[in-house]
Amino acid sequence: MLQHEISEGFVRKVGRNYFMILTIDGQRQQRKTGTNNLDKAVEMLEDWKAQAKAGVVEEARLRYEAMRDEYTQKGGKQVQESILRDLNMFFKNIRVSAITVKKLDEFRAWRESLPQVVEYRNGTLAKEIALRIQKATSNGRKKLSPGQKEKIEEEATTWVDNGVKATTNRRLTVLRAMFNFLVKRGTIQKTDVPSFPIANNVDNKRRGYLDKEDMDKLLKILPGYLHPFVRFLYATGMRSGQASQLTWDMVDSKVMELHVPGELTKNGEDFTLPLVYRDGTPMFDFVTDLKKSARQPHEPIFNTTDFRSQWRQACAKLALGIYNPETQVYRGLRPHDFRRTACRNMIKSGIPQAVAMAISGHKTDSMFRRYAILDKSAVQDAFGVLAGK
Image 1 (cartoon, rainbow, N blue to C red):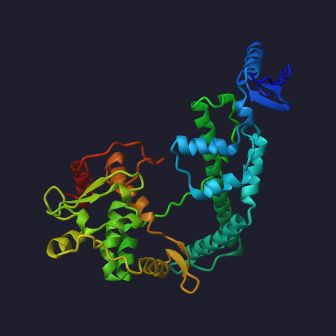
Image 2: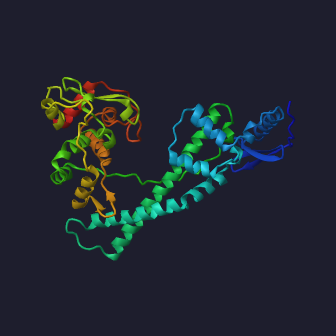
Image 3: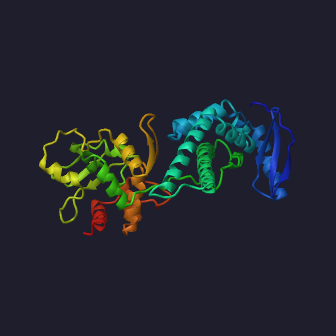
């Protein structure tokens, strides 16, 4: 059996609770006890010493990479590439036991001072200020006073800085999930998980949506061939990338349903979208066209040619965004905002949240509770409410 040099160790009260300090093979380690009872803390220290002497010291040598791999490979967890890149770079070859609150604070400072993050932050801020000034001075409003402009700049700065903090939060949340996964597998103890410094009150979520009046104005400017696509997004809240990949062979022979395969949905689950109301009338304008036209099986349902450019130009004309055709820089209303619009309209019409979530393709969202897969009749009823049928 391997022999390990173990110090006597001691407990120390920090705040309300006790911490255990023990030196194992020359490495000083600290663990939280989670208790303010001295006797219980001492008992936990003795248990830790016994485990260490018996050779249970894997967590002292465990590195970040091993924790990451166990989480992603054995846990089958998918982590966004940019998040993993930052974690890999900062925590390279660091012992899990060395990932303390101080180290996590250092990670936040490091990540938010990266040149690419600072550059993105400054560029986003400039566009956000320009967009807010444009909105504030649209519709014939007078020129902003210095005080009004200063307020806009302050609010935009807070919004953008919150966005930077929020993206760091997401990285810390993933790292915390790695720790918790190891706790569930028994690789480390719950007391080995540090307190994560997640920034609170960070709210930079987009709240853009399009009311019917602006939707009608948008359609008047957009080319006619894009109308079916835009109307479909507005009604369903489906992701534009997903909707652009829908093909005619996904529609049944009677043109009653659209079968969206899991490969196109974010949650990976198939979804059937009814194309007609209960009385048989079409829900979408492309349905009638489909019934009249012969389509190739793999031909896209919607013509989305030059959609992005046309969208940006139209939004700029309506003061819903700012757009520079030369640099292709745009800031403002996005097709993704149709998702909020559709969900808001459905909920406002009295459609149950679970039904709205199924239609838009959400599976988990803070706005809605978890939902089960719904049958098509519930979806038909939902669109029937919107259409007044």
